[in-house]
Image (cartoon, rainbow, N blue to C red; front, side, top):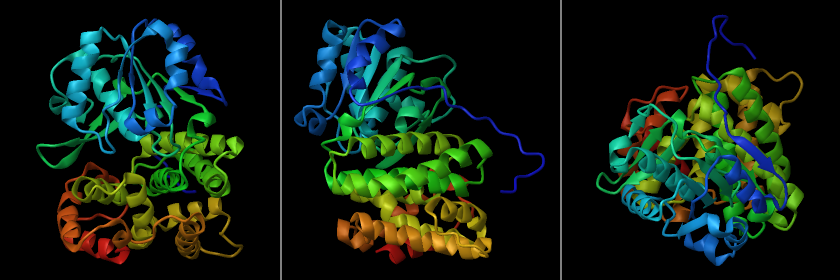
Length: 387
């Protein structure tokens, strides 16, 4: 791996990790360690129905002052504002998020508003905060988003009809409890689609214009673990060892892309989510090999590292050959785990493609793509290749 001789970067990863089957029951101890006494639990209807919140509430006891479960697949500014008002009414001094990326991003938004006041629409942007925010403990119920260790939140602005990006070092979760039992009941499609979200984070971190050695190492190990253990989880959701390894992979991929950033796959997936309501992980998985093909000439070195992590770089391959092998391997992996392969399978229309392409050009993720993207027609061509 060749880096510029004058390479300089900042690696940021302050979240404490608590890992192991049954560790969700330790949430009260972790909360006490933060000096907090009144927790708002944030979750969604699916997690509630699966019974995953019950053990957390039991562990918290009277430390829980309320539950906000009105979080949809793609959380919105209005939802966060209402949840924050509820948290303030209850006197919450910390947030415990139990769920996937949408729930965690909702929790991040609530933490900002509990400290700063106002509405979340006033905090779109990068590094606007000047002080630590309300403590946030995250208990993921999926293994994909990496949101438990990132300073970012992606939230739908209902007025704009577009997802906005909030990036704040001061708002990174303090503690992430990775309990494989919390992902045990995840259905196969959600298992593989959230896993492909993590895979995309790792691959895009390796191709990013901001890539650096620490993020590269985390991304490569995340790819190795996902390649080995995600198919096991898809076939046998009760395999807690494999579940735990995919959780760790998602967290490592979160640290990787949280520092190196993502690219065109995420810009396009964010836009599909806003326009066509395609679940984020599914959009990422479908688009990933097509964007890799689009970026090939500018990202061969990074993709060669993907090939190494996937075990498909053979002796004597140059970087481009290895990069092409990585793209082929990703396509085969999607088929192996039963992930959707085409946008047409998930209800995307020609009209959705045109609208999403326009939005993609204004998405912040596109800035770090290795191949500059300036023309809407280029994005439409990638969408159509994936259609």
